[in-house]
Amino acid sequence: MPSTPYLLAVLAIVFGITFALRAVPFAALRALRTSQTVRQLAVWMPVGILAILAVTALHGTITAHPRAALPALLAVAVTAGAHLAFGRRTILSVGIGTTVYVVLVNAF
Image (cartoon, rainbow, N blue to C red):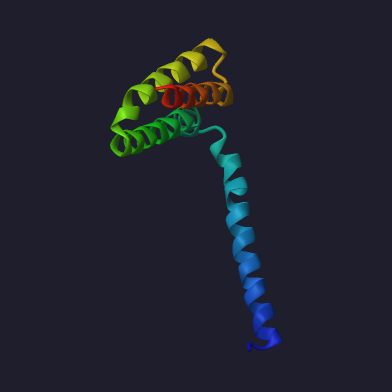
């Protein structure tokens, strides 16, 4: 069993690294607030992440269950429509799209 000073040193190092990794983004944020690139990333990154997630989920669904392709594509269309119709509320549109998908898959 390692000695107590050794364990305390390891804990101090782990604490220091964790604290630094969490503090650095906030320290750098001041300089980045005025950056045009950061503003563009703030606009496009959520959309890109959701698009990658949707493509990955659809690919997995369609390859695993080819019969679920039509319900999946219809649910994507409903999700996009709900997103545009209800003021771009992501949680609401994803919830509606998921509900539509589950209902279509279980109904047919």
